[in-house]
Length: 463
Ligand SMILES: Nc1ncnc2c1ncn2[C@@H]1O[C@H](COP(=O)(O)OP(=O)(O)OP(=O)(O)O)[C@@H](O)[C@H]1O
Ligand SMILES: [Mg+2]
Image 1 (cartoon, rainbow, N blue to C red):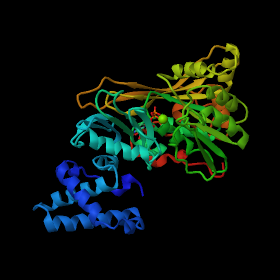
Image 2 (tube, rainbow, N blue to C red):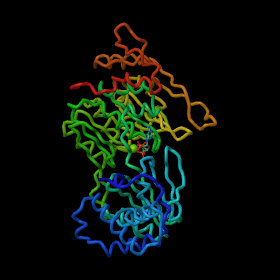
Image 3 (cartoon, rainbow, N blue to C red):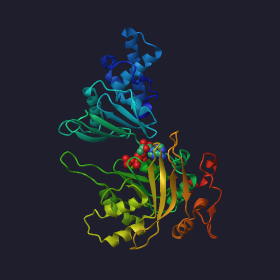
Image 4 (cartoon, rainbow, N blue to C red):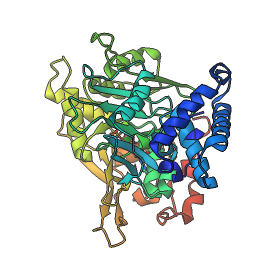
């Protein structure tokens, strides 16, 4: 069971009971409890056992507390003994997407896209460093003056970055990125992260084996959308995912997840995304999913996409769909090969079919801002046709982002590919042609009401 699952998610306990009390009861707990017995219990039993022991100690010698104070103190003591102390309630809170600790007294979280300060605090630098040690020693790393900067992960998958003095002048700084919750396409539509016709179109593109690149800034939701998109890959295909930190959670049976590895302390043994990308081509993949392209692997990915591994997906860090294409060009030229510029263009023109760009808006929401198709061919300069664009309105007094979604008809080449693959095209994108199988009646589905009709979001039986 994960850290997140071990705790209820109310925050009442964060400031109840002072640090000294917690420290005292924790050391009493460690004296009183039989550690060998504890090792035989599962995490739930272990927590229950520890809570009972602290409860006894508190009844025997503790101060008079209200029921709520008492259970909150017990929980804090057990949290300290078991895990990450003051961070545990924050990790248990499903709405928190990022936890930022800037020295012992400043703890911030990101909730629903907004930063807020929370009451949780560590007693002092030493206490914070202990927690940091607990995290990094779990993955065989250490933090000290000689290695003051470390990336690690919690057992539950959360990405952790630590930077301490002398590099950090603000005390030990800990940043925890919540393991992205897998949202389905339906959930993303319900949350307003994209509209139903666009969701249907993207689903059809993935099922129809078009190559899709997801772009966006840091934390804009690229991995989240990639995950939702990959759900539309039929069950009978062999999928290989390649990531720096495995975050994708695919439900299909036939999935192989590869994770790159940083160099060890001696600077050896690193395995890059590019190494994995090249290796994956020898593993007979039907589809390759690259978590994020950042360097030389871009060229290998483009080559794979245009030579038989169509229907592959990747993300790239960029500021717009047009910028994403330029980034791909730049990244693909970062290889040792001296590949002529025209050849690179050729590669992109034949490999990339559709770009989906994500933005973060003023109210903190993450949204698909643009979907564009590559319409240039061969060695032509790259041209994009916008299929969908979200036009945000100025933020109103209620600080909710509103806007309008504009659709354009699919370019004929793309339309034909979808139709050939037996996919229907949402009416919003159709100049319904005589031969086109347009799905009618999806225009108005921007709210929850129409979601029943989203049959197209299901996976196609048997591919
Ligand atoms: N549409 C969404 N609605 C609500 N929360 C979202 C949405 N998309 C992403 N998030 C949340 O935002 C955070 C960042 O998402 P994600 O990891 O997908 O972004 P990213 O662009 O891949 O980030 P990075 O650049 O670090 O790789 C996660 O906590 C995720 O759960
Ligand atoms: Mg990501």
